[in-house]
Every structure is written in structure tokens, then in C-alpha cells.
Image (tube, rainbow, N blue to C red; front, side):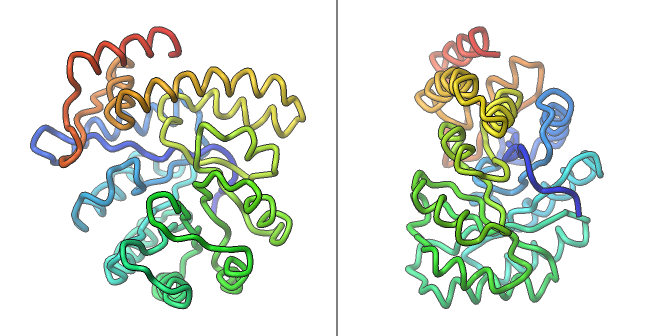
Length: 292
């Protein structure tokens, strides 16, 4: 297993106008992340890949293409989580057979699952796949909040390495790092990377790293060196870019920024707005000229 610390892009997936996967563009985005963004790894099958709007077969195809293109150049984490536990197990087995370095799974959502049900979900995926696991905690989308003691219960399974922490609760982050220093934490909010880094995260997984990965690494490494003001200066620039992206449509704008880099970044998957308006295109161009 490769080193899983550092900067991971949450892999963006380009779709064709009919909603099918744009394989050529996906391979270009992967190469861009490896060669230009210089990321340590890719987080494949997460929210950024519009994962929860595609079929099991399409998820497998994305896993296959990503592994085929990246090979062993960087670390690969496969997000296999689903409300359908059978699908999560099936995807976990597939990604493990492909040679992914680790699995991740979003907490089961929509229904108000009890903590024992959530623990059973993770333990089942691990038992069926034999793979290591990263918990994907994103409470503002799932409604699932896991406390310090509950993480301790999850961590009794030695295959659970840590958590992708996509939350703004830095008190909880600090408590987790102190309570479980041998478990890893990846920050999931790009705009709050510096305060997370100061608290001792082991890495970060972000959607904007597809276009802003170099700055992300600078923030992370400067924080580790104690050069907080320098890191903050770069976080300010990063957040100006993120503010513009969020106001213009997150995934759509990142795709348009990649197109301006010469990449066939395609469209978004419906029911998201699939194609940028003239106004959105103009904003993307202005952001590209200013920040990239």
C-alpha cells in the first residue's frame, strides 16, 4: 500500500452531453492531476465525480479507467459508499481487485441510521473485501454526525485507518487527533485547509485541487513548517478563487477552468445543470486569467 498522506484530488469526472462517461477527457484530467497539479493521489468515486447520480456499472468503469491511466504513479483511494450496502461491497471488491490502495465509504445517509447500523455497514464492507477503509464524514450533506467516542468504536476495527473530515467542526477535529493520534485525518473543506493543517491533519482531499493543487500543497507544507503567515497569504488567494467557483457553480466551473487548460472536461450529469451559460463561461474565463 502506498503512503496515503498528502494532497489528494477528489477526481472530477467529465460526462458527454448524453450523460455517458467521457473516457478521453477523464484520462486527460487524471494526467493533469499527476503531471501539473503534482498530487500525491486521487480520491475516485466521491461527490466531485457526481458519483451518487450514476449506475454501479458506471462507477466500476470510472474505477477501471482511473487505475488504468494512473497505474502505480500515485496512490488511489476508491470511494465505494452507498445507501445500498450490497452495492458498496460489490464496488469495494471490484476496486480492491483492480489494485486500489485503500477504500473509503461515505456514512450511509437519507434514512436516520443508528450508530450500530453505521458500524455494521463499515465492518461488513471491510469483512467482505479485506481492504483498509477511510470513513468519509460529510455531515452537512448526510446529516450523520459521529462523536469522539463513536469514532473510537469504529477504530476498534484495525482496518479503519482514519477519516476524510469534511466538516467545519475544528474542536471535533482537534479532539479526534488527540484521542486517536495513530489514525489519519484528511481535511475535506479546501477553503478551511490552513486551520485544519495547523491542527495536525495528515493530508487533504479536495475538489478544487483539480485546478488548484499546487497552492494546496504549498499551504499544507508551509503549515507543517510553522510558516503560518506565508500559508495564510496563499489561503487568501485560494479562497478568492474558491469564492468565485462556488458562486458560479462548483463542478461546472471547475470543468470550464480545465477546458481553458486544453482538457476535454465535458459536462455535468443531470439533474445538475449540464452545460455552462454564457455568463458562467465568462466568469470561468475571468477566474482562469486571474488565478490560473
